[in-house]
Image 1 (cartoon, rainbow, N blue to C red):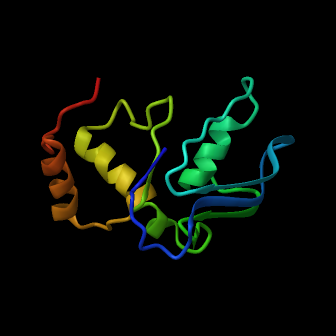
Image 2 (cartoon, one colour):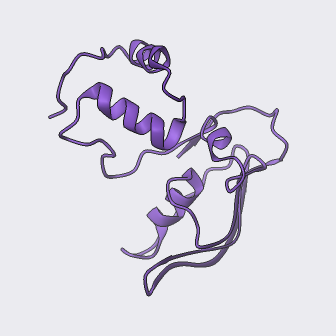
Image 3 (cartoon, rainbow, N blue to C red):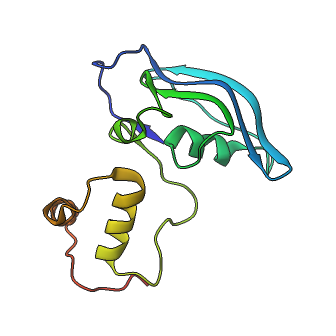
Length: 142
């Protein structure tokens, strides 16, 4: 997980969790987690498989919503402004978030719709591809 190094935010905390819980049916993956980190800190999460490490990171990244509690990224409450926090946080998990049967352009539009929310602005998506050196041709990801 990464953060932009910018001190113009409304909080001295890079991220903060207050009584965060995450339930999957009858399984409680996170149970009232309280956690905060200052800007510039290096943090390691350790635990056995199924301990909730990936779930906590996904909640901080805004990919998964907590069942209860609150999360702030740079003072921004994720419940109120997930799209704003997405501009300062990045998350790369251990599994691909791309759909194998979609083209690069289709995957870009899907990611935009779910996480970035640029809207239906084709030039914005094409600009993103230009910045990464990719083209929006119908190339399948294999």
